[in-house]
Structures are given as structure tokens and as C-alpha cells.
Length: 282
Image (cartoon, rainbow, N blue to C red; front, top):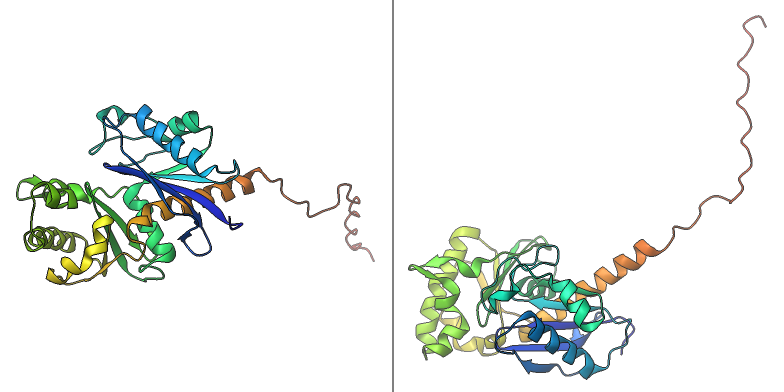
């Protein structure tokens, strides 16, 4: 493996996948490995799959691990859940993965991981304005990046549109579930992205998720004010973003644990006393 390597795991409603990532290039160093998401997707079952992924790659214990997860993450804890088992609510994901794998792990919202990957290596790199990275899959994940800074846990896939939760109506899973044509699905995306534009006024919309491989089937059917483009990292963005953040956390932890270098000798000479003031009688 390259010297600067971390491992990313992307937990989704239908599959859990992982791979090692070269952090100089953003490329996967081995083919990603995917296991179907267990049903029901309880904490114990999902952590078991994460452990199986790590075992599959026989990772050295020193390799940082990041997990991209389909829920908001507040100090490692899952406060709310839409697409996995409700028993996740209140669970400390970071601690659950540590117990199940024996590794300290960075955990991050899945849309935030994908957005961070696009900022680090993809089409949003060095973009000076506001970028909305939209992940279309089981649900709709949204990452907001302004001037390279990430606004975490933006759950804008749950906007109410036409009286419905937007992701239940416009996610890629809705297209599959209802056997929608590309044109009919694009009309739903048009309505959703128009609402995103009305609320946020992004300069760029980046569309990711597995279905982004077929972006030519639906992106040309959309007519929006901001530019809209497919994600460069496509369905690997969650893996890459989680790996990048894991490496950063590991580097920060190492720096915090390293004693500061001395800048003065251990036994410094006693400074000379200040000179006496001039005599007033001189």
C-alpha cells in the first residue's frame, strides 16, 4: 500500500462497501468490496459487516479507518435515523465500531463524506463559491460546502415537497420502486433541485451516488439556474471522504500526543540582574 493510506467504509441502505484509499491521489488502491446491508440493519448486524470488510482486506492496525453513515452524527452519536433500523437512535456509532472491530474509527454523515471527497479530489476542488453535493441513492444526501468549508449534517433530503418527504419521492430508490422512466424521474428532480436553489442559491450542484454513472440519462433533462454536473468520484465518494477524514483525525491525535520540542536548554543560566539606575547625585 502507498505510505499515505486510509480505509473508508460507506454504509448504505442496500449495501456496505469499503476499500483502502491513496490519500495523495484519492484513488482506491484495491477494488472495493461490497456486502449487502443486513435486514434488519441493527447496530450489531451493521458493525458485524464492517468488521467483515476490514478482515477481507487484512489491514494493518496502523491504517486509519473512517465510516460514512446515513444519518446525522453528533459527537459520534446517531440522533435520528431514516433508512436503517430505528434501534440506531441514540447509539454511539464510533464506540460501537471500536468495540466490534478493535479499532478507533472516524465516523461521519455519508453525504458530508461524499462532499468532502469532492472538495479534496473532485469537481468541487478549489471552488470559491457555494457547492451543494447531492447523493441520490436509497435517500437523498446533501453536503454544503462554502469556500471549501463543510457545513455538516445538512439533512435537506427531507424537505417537504408536494406534501411528501422529498427523498421518498425523488431519490433513486423511488425511481426503481415505482418503475419511473428517466423523464418522469427527472421531473421530480427538477422540482426538488428548484427548491434547493430557491433556498440556498448554490453556485454549483454536484450529483453523486450510484445512479450518477448514468448521468447522461437525466441531467440533460434538468433546467436549472446553477450549473449541475456529475460527481467526479461517483459512487466511491463516501469511501474516499471517510478515509480522508480518518487520516486527518489520526494525524491530529498523533500531533496531540507528541511532546513539544524544547526551545530552551533544560538548565538555563540565571539571567543577570538589571543594571542599577543612574544616581541622581552624579
